[in-house]
Amino acid sequence: MSSWITVTPRLQQGLDVVSQVDNGKFRLLVNHICQGLHSTVNDKIFTVEEEDKLMLSLNMKKETLSLLLDTMTFIYSQAAFGVVKPAMMESVLKESFSISEEKVSIIVNTWIVHAKRIIDALRQKSIFPRHVEDVNWSLNIQTASNTTVLEPKSKVLLQLEMAGTKRDTITVEMDKTGVAELYNNLEKIQSQLDAMK
Image (cartoon, rainbow, N blue to C red):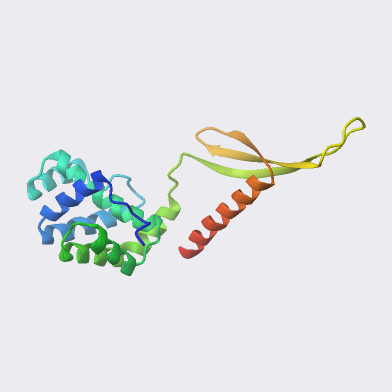
């Protein structure tokens, strides 16, 4: 059930910080984080001045504030990548996270308001500087020659034309098993993309 997020030691440290934040301030904070996640204008959610004000308002050191912001950004990003429904989020937060019911409610209600826009914004962003621009393929079959009898072997060559910071071509050779694995993985990816619609 909790496959969309795993509680690591760092995440647990962040959750400990979350527990210390006043609920009213926490509600405003996560709302601002979610607005920043669905904004495609700037990759940084808080300016330096805003972070300074947050340190004063929340009475935190810079490292603690960074941990808090990273934790909440991570939770919402993981939920967006997993296209997590609010009921599933609430269930996982209650079972796996050591935070109060009120904090869970704030996180889930903020997710309900901002989920669609965050997911849409993540669809538009590429997390990698390079992407596949074109795919070419060929099927090669090795057969018998005059001197030897061989069982026919097939190999597929995939050429991925990459674009981004640098243009180049990646060639991948696969047998039938490799092609089947690739196909199954692409099917899984397609079903997740379809779920985002």
